[in-house]
Amino acid sequence: MSEILIVENDLNIQQSLQRCLNHANFNTICCNHKNIIQNLEHNKIDAIILDITPRQENDFELCVKIREIVKIPLIITSINSEVSHKVNAFEKGADDYLTKPYDFLELVARIKALLRRIEPQEMIFGFLHIDAKKRIVKLHNELLELTNTEFDILLFLIENRLQPISRDRIAHTINAIHEDTGLRSIDTHIRNLRNKLGDSAKDSKYIQSVWGVGYKFCL
Image (cartoon, rainbow, N blue to C red; front, side):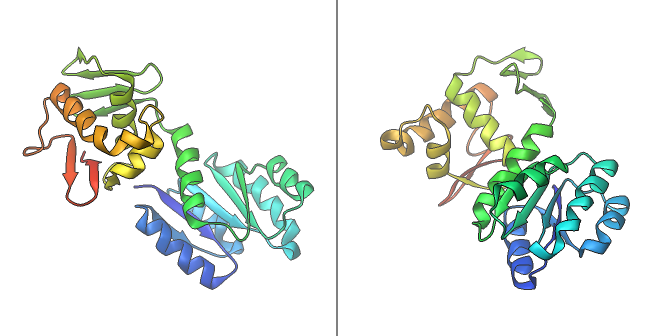
């Protein structure tokens, strides 16, 4: 489970952000600007959300210090929407920039996107091997012939593993699934994918059905 360091000036936003990230299956640590480096040195942090107010322009130098220690995703949040302010943030080492007020769900999506970029392209779950870059799946070292849609669904479930993903979210994320027929066809794609994985709904080794929600990758 990824560890996110939250550096947020507004206590109400900090608490709401922490609840949202915890709900999205992230671990969180909250600190003030003075304790960032200390937390990076004593904790395994996977991404940082750093809030900067107009009165804290010098805190951009924190980005430089952070980059000297770690190369993890760094997201700047600020009420300042000026382009020059954003450019300064990126030049100092930020990977992303969100102007307040922002939607927490968008922030979660951006964090996941940044974390995917640093995830290893090859993933191993027991006897199941996935090469995301080459789009190859092997089970017991035997190549599985998955359709593009089946591969995309499997990879999407893995990227969001251990949390249930709704059929509606799968339908709107996988481009090959048309929205009008997506919810009806997803079960068919899952069933075909399970057959190729030697999996089943009753005895789930990889893809588990979550009643009333959808599916999740369970390794």
